[in-house]
Image (tube, rainbow, N blue to C red; front, side, top):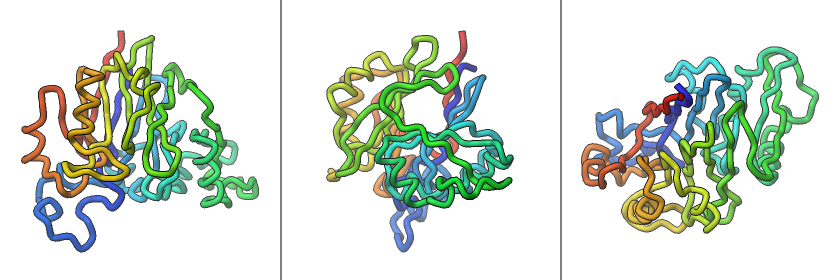
Length: 262
């Protein structure tokens, strides 16, 4: 294995089932219709990291039996991507064990404001979260994986997706929240093997891509495989997944993708 990606969550900001909703999807017994907040866990031979820590992060770690996280990277400072941040404390138990935390300067500023007790340097005890902020200003490496930030438009907050490359190969792009992909991001995506992209629902939304908008990106980029994520309860997996073109599918919580080594 060169890289493995696990979908910790594939749902919209309120998750599915939605509180107080009695629609067919929220009442569905199909596990693929149970969607926690968006996050992925990535392992390579040399290290492991998580992309975003939403309010379901503890539950997701327990479900997937995650024992190792070496870094955390963030897409943007919205509630459904940040508020499980303190659960990273289980991965910085020792006094001298710090967690590198990557994000845009704006995103890190929000994290530091929300979790000041972790960042202020006064709580360096065993068992406490000890983050080490790493502002993103361009591509960086996690072990042997090159990570390139992909700027996208998503409402009024600075948001990025990520492109993961190993051995010069564009293995995967992860873009969970977007409405429009910038030209330089579209250019960076050409040649990617697997595209994971926001596809909220069929009907238009002001800050998220619809199925048709995401399919337009897929037709231009032409990856080997595309997975839709950040799904609303308008979408029932068993009904909608078979309707998609070949090479395009709806992701679901717990799904694992793997890329083989040389």
